[in-house]
Length: 502
Image 1 (cartoon, rainbow, N blue to C red):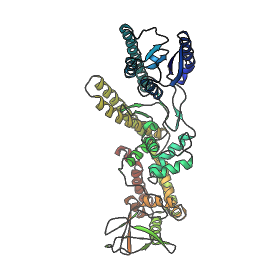
Image 2: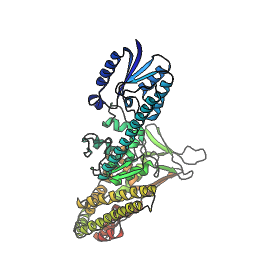
Image 3: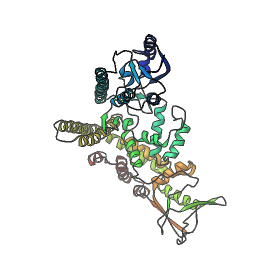
Image 4: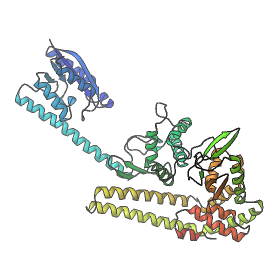
């Protein structure tokens, strides 16, 4: 009896349970071999697509046949062995070497020119089927993307809810991903430290291991979390209709840090003022060291005249500056009146702010329509369209987020009230807070700390200096409130600021 090998294949586990399953292929081949008095010496079984090259079991089988370990090969159909022409060329080479190749389903005599031609045609048809299927799949994917659905696996922090359904926020991992963005935006957690912190909080791989730095970087770069779907390979972006996990402001802050446009991380350390003090002479950060239970800071360069300065001296000087900023008990009634006036003022302008934002949103939407029309008319290239489309989608997300904040009563009044509450507790927090909280206060209040010899200079940020130099009157506090509103408003328009002036 002739010794043959047999190859059976399905593309997916689902296909193995439906249609021409592995069991059906095996049964058909065994019946075929029995009728022709053929012995199957080895079975090669695979569950992988034949559209691309690189099937490990198929490659091992071809190598075995080239080594003449069997006289022939039996398969159920031509498309079970190959759906790409390169693999078919490998099978044709086996035939040319004298290997008997037989197909149960197709009655083709491969020893004749007509039979080989018929097999070649069937192989081309199988390859064309894959090309057509690929085009139809891409067409379906593009349609879902344009509708706002993400037809791929949900990123970490979202749940897959089935085919054709929206991705929803994972109640367990979603808050952890949001926390990762917030920690990284604080500039206190580089990727290595963030990796350890998120593992301790419970953000892990499916196997329970820590996420790699590269995986965390992919998460922090993914605009899916603000409602924008990005297809990296095609450099295309689409507006998603899923619920955003974070704000676009937080996402942009993280991108700036990832791009290296801000100063390096201020890593938490046993020394409170690590990387915060600069030498006046060499313009470099001084080093901290612990001696006899106290922390000292000094410049270690031989040519620098700076001497050691104890950490307690810096803390005492900082506390004196914070006392100037701290709201005193006698000012409380004045601050309460100013906040009350602002609350009435805000009620009169909030609707106008909403209308202005809605107008901005309409302009962005019109720009998107114009951009799309220009692309369809052939006036701009695909790359130009992709760049402009991505930028406008980010602008639209920002406007939608701003509009949502305005409609949810996230008011300037409440922010100013919170700001004043923080001013009341600066001294207490500096004296009783954790080292991380103390560093945040220092970063917020002081613009720079420099040393020269055995002396040092604290430079308070301009807006904090304005607060420290205030007079304790209502008019002075109105002027001060207007200044604070400008800081809270950030890059908002002058019309916005004008509406809140007291």
